[in-house]
Image 1: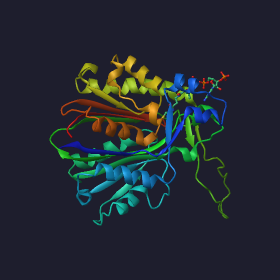
Image 2: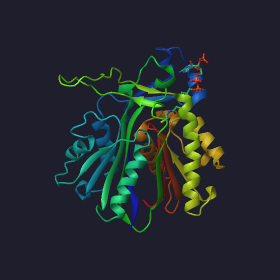
Image 3: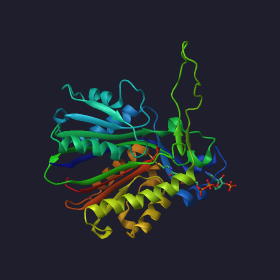
Image 4: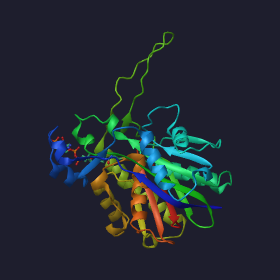
Length: 322
Ligand code: COA
């Protein structure tokens, strides 16, 4: 059994913050940010991850009956609360009263591709038939605005898809990670209130921290190797790929990936200039944008690829059906 994406949706926060706005709070310039990253602005949320996830889900369900969903998976590293999960709350806000499972997963910026593969596995095994998958992150809550190399990169947002059992759609997926890179991206958190019986070090930083240059090299390397691997094991070449929906971290990473894979830059869709890096929301936000613009045609071969904290990566190859 295959899984197909039958619908997409997204939510973009209203607050637009340009590079020029950053010039007002730190030693930086629009020219530096555009030249190093391609980012011109990002969108910042003023409410919650749950609001963003729910709005993206509603958008994906605009022509579907929410009660037909039999599982909800949310990819995020920035839930408003650990319990209830974002997925629990989305289910409630959508008014789903059936006792369906709903849960969050976290693989940082690779999270959406991990959630996609999880949903696919449930569908392919016949356990569930129609799954709502959401990617959402509220990055701006954890940014250190005194760290100019990191805070300029990120924005907030949510994207959603509905997947269901079908005869075409999914082709393959590769997930992976590296163990010698645990310190490359960190967000320590969470509040440790201490324990009167156990002495242990308490964490004191909940800022998002990143070694940018190392992440850059990792991203270009795994984008090339994982896309090569998925094409090779399906006896395809980069010429067979119609579009790449990559995690939107930096325009230079996208351009380097295209060069390394010998693909025209036009095949790598991009919205990083307008939304920045939205972590788990990045791939589904761009997928929804492309879908609504009519850029995705039935039968097209599409690569989804993401990379990030862990360090982790994921690449999916699919045929567009919706
Ligand atoms: N404005 C102006 N100058 C800045 C700056 C900013 N916002 N941020 C850093 N700089 C300065 C640095 O202080 C440094 O100055 P120095 O040479 O005087 O010490 C100089 O620019 C170069 O810094 P460096 O960190 O080497 O720049 P870079 O070319 O590696 O670019 C990133 C920094 C973060 C843009 C780049 O490494 C990157 O995009 N990495 C990928 C990160 C990413 O996408 N992560 C998410 C993956 S999920």
